[in-house]
Image (cartoon, rainbow, N blue to C red; front, side, top):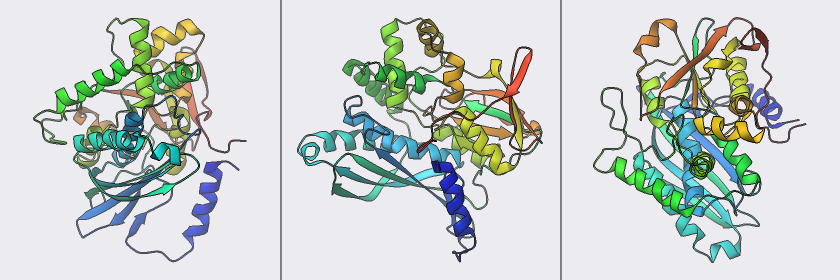
Length: 373
């Protein structure tokens, strides 16, 4: 039994039990939706990061780990089309880590990202543990009934994805080969954040644009050295940029009919969305936006860029569907990030097909699974 099979069983067990009428949707989405008032809903999500499973201490500076711990939960709130408001974080640390400056650096990275999006750290817990364990909770809000679920895609809806794919998976491959983020790259990234956000209000939306730092190039055609490309891919894995601005616009403007963030991989997350909506999809391989650094580096290293884009996880881009009539209302850019149409929803339930040149075949979910068989 893998994690998804267990979640399905748990969902069945809880469906018949008494529950609060204020819980609108629970297990099965990126977050739970809870009725807050007559006109507002609360969206709650939680994520667990465990050392040696979700990250390796030697490969990620604590400041970047703090950033990532919050980023993965902000991405879930974005996938629900909600606006983040506050967070809680619980952390377990071994004694020798507690005695170091790890905790201070971790929260420096966490709070820097929180400040960017106007998110208040409202509480949490600290415990001694055998390894580093982090539990991140973020609360967001949306107009009543406007949260974007995975279950509302319809045949004919067009499938879109933000940004570019494959970069985080390539970064993980590089880490496994011994590559490490350069401190100078980390400093440049932090300076980029400060430069872009200086003097701007958090999440100040104007004309469909939201100011967000471009700490990591995704899809850029700028020529760089291999070392610069390696550092960019490492930061795609270690310092993901949650698409908060896109999530807010897709939710508040009621543009997305369904949505999920790409944490397990495009192939797997598209299957999750189609399963919840009882639909299928036809994806055009040529339309999938592959990170330019992945194309230039991985093609020379016997790694298939398309496979990384399809099955590699932790890009934390948004995968969403749009009614054909609403496509013209999509902004060209949000936070400097564009979207790409990659396919269409079909009425063949849970049948995902990939079209490449003159071939069409079933796209099987091959993204990450805990406790995979």
